[in-house]
Image (cartoon, rainbow, N blue to C red; front, side, top):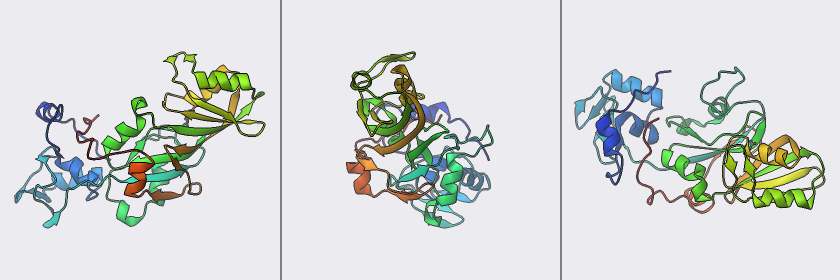
Length: 269
Ligand code: URA
């Protein structure tokens, strides 16, 4: 797969502050679902893409939703509709694009489940789940949604169910709920409840590395299985390896995302 070149400085500068909404050509094509990121780069490189009637071979050509763009002579729309998919992650696959461990990734699971009309997008995983964690993982075509859903300042709750070794007591639940200091700093207050004898439901607003397991471990509850069952008020409702696209109402209400209020795009990594 081709890797994305670094954007030029002028483009990064233009994207900070209150720059008008716009994008660069290759990213706009995959955000709008016209071509996947590697296909977009290849098409631009091959001279198949015209901007304002002229062939461009520069992936960072600035564009807006109104720019006249064709691919292989066909006009394409660059308007971005924020799309969000919910996937039920199985155990054993990693939440990374690269498969260094050769165990399979969440993108392999996504690819196997993606219906044809959604294949033209560049999909981003929204946060990560550990290899042995199962459950609700979101994907989106819109980096602004990733920033929204993973920011601790947005307070979007993530609800986990942990099967634990050790006795679940009121004191331990109270400690989890108050928040605690882990080796990377204090945690925000959480919600912690028992579910039956050997399970804890932990609702966090942060997404730090192994956070649920580390918090549980700190009170003497070692998690032997972890499942994410909800984000915001969205509750996982697809079977393992299953996928569904959320409606615009769900994105706004259950995940509290307002695309109009979040115009500026994060820079390319
Ligand atoms: N907390 C963890 O410990 N693991 C996860 O996968 C998610 C949250």
